[in-house]
Length: 165
Image (cartoon, rainbow, N blue to C red):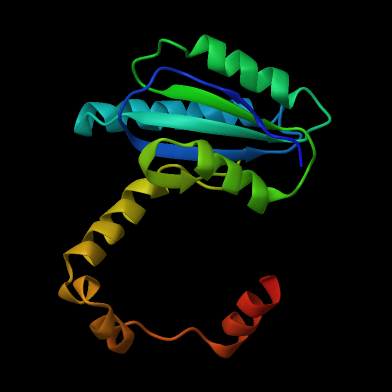
């Protein structure tokens, strides 16, 4: 596989990286971006966090990579959201696109959203609240306790996980 091409910005601490795998999304993504930008603007006012969006082009055949480069240039000095782009020249699937986004992200926390808006960015707050609650529970601090508290996955879920490996 060819080494992905990365559009970089200055080094800084990032609290949240939003990874967006993109495959032929040049027409659908702008709406998702606008909704995400609006949400992050409000979140930044409440919590003063730093956020980056890592857009991963997964070998798109449309103008997705050109769109990503434009977002990177347009938001280069933005105070709300930094935008970075990763170009994977050959389509290798959503899982690999997410993996590339994780590898090149700088955030302490990672979040995946779909480029077509299938994932509502506003759900991030509920997710974050639950993650914080999990960290506050004492059993998270000792793995042996976690085994007795966490419910086991249903058999069909275990089979799906084994098949995907």
